[in-house]
Length: 328
Image (tube, rainbow, N blue to C red; front, side, top):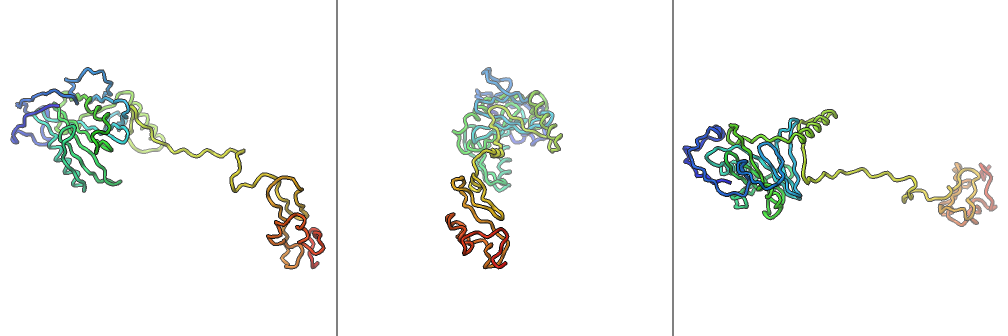
């Protein structure tokens, strides 16, 4: 991080109107010891593995996931680091040579949040003066924490979300990644506050292009894809339940094992000890006469012992012949 002497308001360039490389550099820049983020000229030789994204080289500590939204050419529009229930979104902008822009950015962010019905408060945090905001969205109100770091001709905007937004001690891996960030501003002239170009490594860019092409081949829409690396948790996919095997035990509504009860004219009850737990029911006839012997007995008669089932049909105690009627 760098400390700059404030110029007078008359010497301050208009917002976005002057190229940072053409701004007057008569002001003295005092460079102090820093723990990061680093400029490319002061990048430490710490042996950390960093993902080269063009304008930045981003370390991904253990337990942290990396996600980038990109197009088919590998141009990145959003960079997010995640761990647990916390997330960090990074945005790197061009800045003038003579001064930092975090103070002006705080005013702009505060106006955007309050204009959308939210609340914002300036607090002192781990990264200096930060903004603690209550942002209103479609799914309710969320708490986010904005932090800014001014560097030589660049500015890093860090947006903490989730648990890290309200608790500074949560998710130290995200602060470690931000502290190890290396910014390679380059010599390209750019308007102030213009986002620095970020690009995926060739292998990741090919993966993103293949995903977009596959989606279009399947009739989908969209020209962007999300590429992940590091310890990014995989989304949980709800799978269909496995089909029940044929030899599985029957459910409560299934017919119990054993022979079926005989049906039709002249049917006889199953032999004793033949198995099966279903009570046998006599066949039903089509005769509707109340005194007909072929009329089925009441429901209570169907559960009588086997010795009394046939006596309930007629006075003689013998079952009628098939198709016989008492009045015929």
